[in-house]
Length: 442
Image (tube, rainbow, N blue to C red):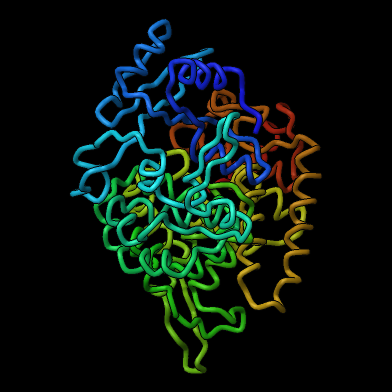
């Protein structure tokens, strides 16, 4: 296993003092998967005060000292070094009340969450694997170390971590671990929304189809607003899936961008509330985009997503079912109304939405891709896209005698004229056009 020089320095200094020391957890897992580790954690038999003494010449952070962790700043990079430990009771299902240090590496690793994260490595020993982590990597399995009920009862966040790892690597969660996750999902109510948001994003950004399909009860534990969509038949020629199954297909089929993934996860959350059936037995969801937007706003704010992410997702949800045409006139007006970037994203949302519909409607995606291509071609001409792009401004219009709200109406009138090619975007021509058509401005 390749180890960066700064990690070798840490391991060598601890070893030179007679202590055991290994890199542990995700870096070993990623190495065995053929991936490049992003960061490294170190576990050691050295006690915290011995770690501090060993690295007295370095900048140290000791805010994790209670749990046996000392952070060493080496080459301007923070590395957490943690003493082998045994955790006490987890009364809050998240943090141990106390920890007890141990000299046994195996005891330390036995408290960790999953077998694939319970391996260590040093250049002297190679990979040390007490719990079958390498085999589980080969079998593509997420399995708890020891009793999964105990692992999840200790730290309920591990339930979502199991789903995240399964999504990230495309692995299955083994039956006993999955059963424990289902049964103990109620413990998630005690987890902070910030941590839930982080894990949810990790789940969505991976190969999330099977996780969303197999663990809807856990997903609904953190987003209860989705429960109504599970099993909800749509009674529509466009849909051969329930609302939730459609949501899964659209979410998993979208680009791996958190804006798109959140949009597709929540775009139809308002359908059950909007449903009605006509006399012919056909289902309809009139106004469901606005209902979905309202519900999604509540969800995103509760999970403390940033204003930027929230605003963009809500914009896409609110407009996800607009009718589109592949004509230059429509494209021009859509670009002005939604913005160039916003309109192109809406086209993508239409494509993702179609991935969850009945197979015989997939042909429409060629239609949407054509709109996207023609939109890009239109944008290459650098057309006037908003009022600020007009060659006249409020002062120019005011000079013609327009006052108050009339100024804004006049500018929008000119914008439409440019889009519809009734007038070129040149100052003199725009002012002449405005004078001639003053009576037509409403």
